[in-house]
Amino acid sequence: ARSESARLRAGRPFGTNVTARPGRNLRPIRPRVRATRGSHVPDTITITDDRTGKTVTVPIEGGVFPSSALRELDSSLYCYDPAYLSTASCKSSITYLDGDAGVLRYGGYPIEQLAEHSTYLEVAYLLLNGELPTKEQLDVWVNDVTHHTFIHENMRKRFVDGFHYDAHPMGMFTSAVAALGTFYEGAKDIDDPTQRNRQILRLIAKAPTIAAMCHRFSVGLPFNQPNNDLSYPANFLNMMWKIGDYEVDPVLERAMEILFILHADHEQNCGTTAMRVIGSSHADPYSSAAGASAALYGPLHGGANEAVVRMLTEIGSIDNVPAFVESVKSGEGRLMGFGHRVYKNYDPRATIIKNAAYDVFEVTGKNPLLDIALRLEDAALSDPYFVDRKLYPNVDFYSGLIYQAMGFPVEMFTVLFAIPRMSGWLAHWQELLNDPAQKFSRPRQG
Image (tube, rainbow, N blue to C red):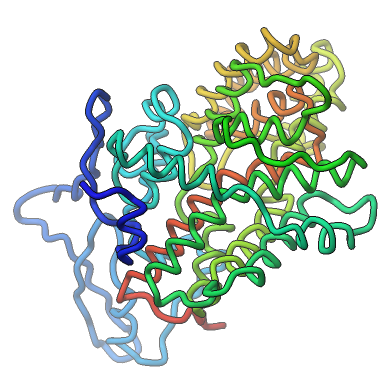
């Protein structure tokens, strides 16, 4: 197989099938078409317009039927669906999510296997290409990403220095991602596969550099240049914390790797939808990613783990957990980090993060909030009030405790989310541009 660099030079886009890497026991699980309930029951739905008596029958595939059925009945008829709770806006093979069963897969690979056996850059490659790389492809991919981690000096010296001294790191990150596109010729040539691939590579490579730069600026420390001898997560930690003879602890490096893998993609969430909507206008990937970052900046999207830390801090003691649980049940408080728009079961990422937390605490010392979190989890999972409502811990319940133990201020939590999600956003942006069914997004109003 040709190297990724050769494919890049030849203009062959990411998203092309590749051969699975030898030596790994990872096997993708492809979702199957839902079986009919009986041979006499067709996978169709018939809709009748009671005003006219006109009917239309259309197929159901994977629980979804085409909205064209409404237009066949009446060209002026639309479905009112606030927040798109019942609307599928695209077909995607990037991530499979079954919220009822608590299943999450990237490209068919269970998230549990990827978190245990893979690196973040392998997962990023999987999201973009639909398959894990061979060893040769991975070597080229890692080399390419590693040697694009530096950012333009004008970005650091002029753009970043223009922010107020107490600017929020996520606000800086969002602005910097948008500005980054102005530094590269060809950034707007999205119809050119070679240029598209080049910008994808740059954004994944430079996201940790921008993130670390924003933090160092916010605390008044000099910027650390990338170290190309380090892995992707170790390089980020080094840029964040290096003062004097700092060395990255391998346990924290692996924990960062796992957190990056778990946050790389999550189907059609708010930020990804923003990326696709902006991308549908054929905006450059930097502008699209900045829009996705802005969506993530919202407290209802990327700020949940920060809210968990604040909640646990306010509870203050395991002795206060029963009273807090009762206050939530009576409508006087909110149980942050439990429940999810999609998951009606235990979020599989939460289990992985909870296990990783203990490894981190062996190095950093136990986060004093952990005992409160464990007692709160036990109380909620044994209470019919929360179980009946299918309120289980999600990925945010423990991630904030790990970040805090590793020294990250709460203001950086959303930035830590944005770094790995960059690969997922770009995979969806690329998939959108390669999908002939996708048009310029323009919802209707009721």
